[in-house]
Amino acid sequence: MKYLGLFVWGFFISTAVLSAAPWEGSDDFSSPTLTESLWGTYNQKVPRLYSYVAGGRLRVIHDSNVHAVYRVWGKKWHKLPTAACWTIQADVFLPAAPTSTRTEFVKAGLGVIPNPNSKHDLWLGVKQEFWNGFATGFPNLMVDNVFRTRPSPESEEIPLGQDLRSFRLTIAHDALQMLDTLTIARLDNGATLEQRQVVSGMPVAKTISAYVGISGKPSWSALGTDLGVDNWTVVENNPDPIHLNPQNSTSKGIAYSVSVTGLDLVNQKLTGTVGLTVGTVSATLPITGSIDKNGYFALTAKGAGANKGFGCVLLYDVATGTYRPNKNTVTAPKQKAIKF
Image (cartoon, rainbow, N blue to C red; front, side):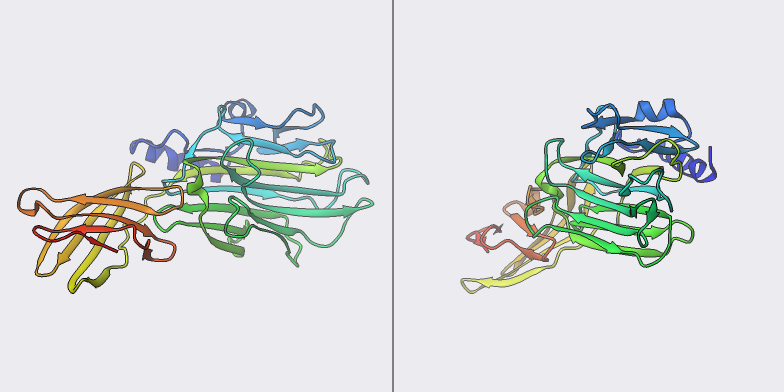
């Protein structure tokens, strides 16, 4: 097992004590048997297309101008929750020359998709084009953000402008900030080549599936051992809690304020503290909630004991830093409910 593989496996061994999620894991592609136990397949109905493990990498044999070869993380498709924070990473390698004059291009990368039948996914990869047995220019970086129909889909190929052949690809999902960060970096020194940060569209699905893709269209043989994927990891992150922008205003002449602090994700649920002030009375309450299909934070708090009568129902858009209009209610003892 390679050094990086040892580092990755060591990381997961150390976090196992913390009850790693069942969808977390890694594969350094040092064992064909292990890889087959960790990965499923997707749309691989063409017998001349298949991936295999050799020399510590996932490789491909390809004979199709239409299909690509995809391997899905999880033998039965692991489901990564969109209401959690996680990072997916893999190393990819491109060849400088094709295996035949028929080869038009090769590409390799990773992505996430809400379900097997969806046409919307998020993909990050690299591509090299060929003509008559020679490379045409340098590799292109591929960034596709078409996970949902809004905001407007983004799909593009970016000329790299330099002769690099090894890359590290990362997709990081931050459910607390509602951001997805896509990064393509040099493998040799870690320098970032391209990075995109987009408002996450993932909450449209409760879970997503992760995959790798690799192809050499329309022809790629087993001789092409310099095309491959290595060092796959997927880990759950635990970012610091956040504070929401406070709401300070008046309603029918009564001043009120709402301040949510220390908001964290615990078992894919939101938990934190809310400070409420209505007129001259105030209270601090625990607040809980979840992330809805639009990515909004749906939060509720209800006072008890000395704080009985205080409470709130809130709907917050973390992407814009604002509460959704006319979707929020604050209550206090002997006061009419305030809606904003």
